[in-house]
Image 1 (cartoon, rainbow, N blue to C red):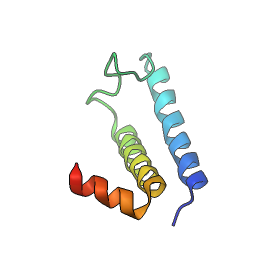
Image 2: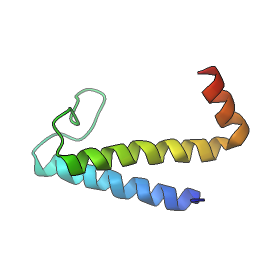
Image 3: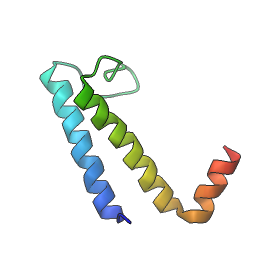
Image 4: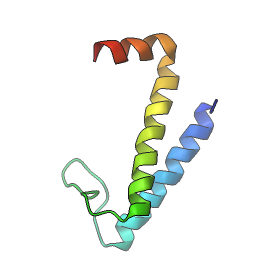
Length: 76
C-alpha cells in the first residue's frame, strides 16, 4: 500500500513531466480556460496523463478512507 507522501511524489513527477512537455511544445500551462492536453499527446505523454489521473484518484480514495470512498462510489 502506498503512503500519502509516496503517492504525492508520484503525482508531482507526472505533473512535472506533463508541464515540461507542454513547455517544450510552446503550449500554455494547463488550465480550465484552454484545453492544452487535447487529444494529440504522444503515447508516452498520454500514458503519463493517465497515470496522473489514476494516482490522484488513488490518493483521494486513501484520504477518504474505506467508508467515505465506498459511499461516494455508491451515491455518485
